[in-house]
Length: 412
Image (cartoon, rainbow, N blue to C red; front, side):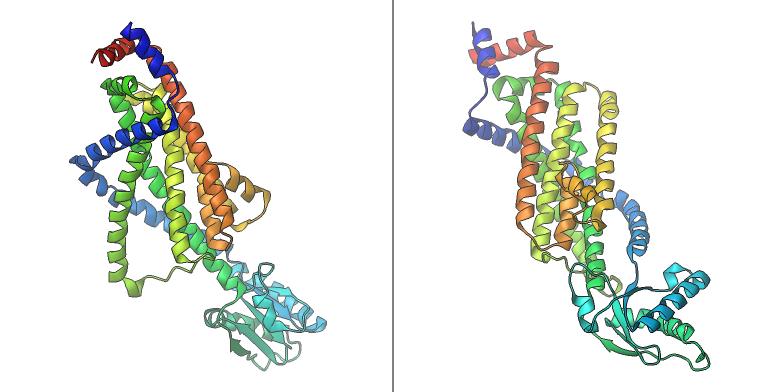
């Protein structure tokens, strides 16, 4: 009779307070076991090895950033001068290459200064205005110094009959332009996404290995006889998340020291649209959601695997799929509001990466609260699904053993 009553009790769904209390017990148990183990020190040394990969990825990201950079300048001149300048630009681009000659976009306006500050519809680094006889360049100091020479060569080519006189462009500096601000925010978005996926892939696999180890030692079946499966999965997830946060805090401290030592050799990271404090807070929140999403998926995979070989076989598609979702979010970073970017922001496994990029480029805060709630819903859904798989593949297949263990708990 204890056997039957215990099985009936463990099969019913626990109330939410009891579920949370049991999850806290499991989380505290796993967290203490990991933090006070000798292996945790070596875990903290783990990022040293993928650091070389990160440097290589940074160089690739720099190349992508250069490809994103359109080097567009607004051309505000009369129709004849604009046509001559555009024709000269085409000729120079064929001779020197597209990346060495800035793109000119003819704009009709009576206020050239307002063009580079006109908001989301423009992506200009500066404005070439005046006339071919007396050209003027409006832009930031960095962009003026970078592109003044090529633009003077372009103006000189556009002048018909005055090739003997070198062109000289008068300049006027502004604090920032819409193009330079957008490109800076793109850099911040790319760096944030790269760090997020690196930390997620580095840390999420520990959930899977911990579950398989306890399945092999039959510990998980003893726990399942005492507390609901949902509580076991939820507790393990948050224990691993707490461990990951401690690791990130240690690595962040080391990175901060390294940045202070190399302060003069590192370029400043452009400020995100939402501001640094909010951006960093959202970065932590989106890492937690990305970690919990992938970890809950790995828990479901672990419920179907009984050996390390099966774990490797089953987890590889999930890992590769997560990389595909990251590439989707990275590809859509320059396409805000387009269908592919909306898909990346809504799909749960790519949503943390896409929404972090939005935080770097847009000031709206409500969309992040909505996204975090949506991602939390999927975490709970995946935990419930993984627990169902665990009951079906482990506990039901070993019903006699589970009943025996449950009976022992009931008698005690």
